[in-house]
Image (cartoon, rainbow, N blue to C red; front, side, top):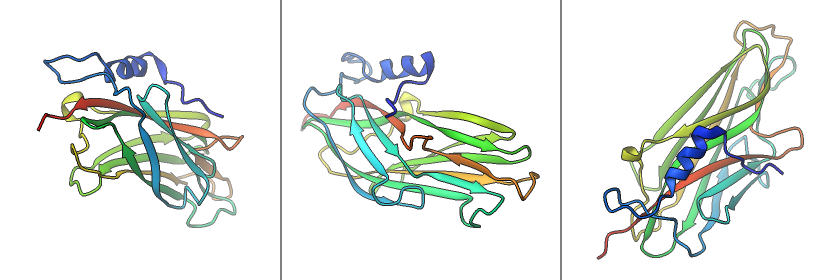
Length: 216
């Protein structure tokens, strides 16, 4: 099973910064010591049929991992005409200890791509809290010829982090998408992109920043 390893030193540094000791000038604190429970409220999309997506929280409460086992977009050959785009929307119920709130500081995506010369693909993600008008979109393009594992990291500047409202239960929504374009490649040749792996198990890790809610 994929372990959600960090993608390089830069991301490791970012995640380290995501959970600093309390600093009055920034308001950032260590993650709360109590257990954080993340449950999947709904899973919808062609990239995550029922039973093919699972969520786990790290032991130190600084991240959670979504594991997919059937997330593949493809074009060319005998591919279904609708298979060029796959998406998955997760609606997560996040229970955090009283007095704390959270934001998603970064997200690491991994998978495999086999793109013919002339073909291209895009991995896209958006993030928003239920009832919020603030939606953050991130795109990562890929070009053929490519036949290798891929990885992408979304990061958010500290000043632009969107925190869950304090004292209110709001589901956190993540909408991901894979899109493959045949471009100038031969129509008889298949190009595909997955957010899973040959053993049907890949991880997408979301790193959390924590903040104390203001006292009432």
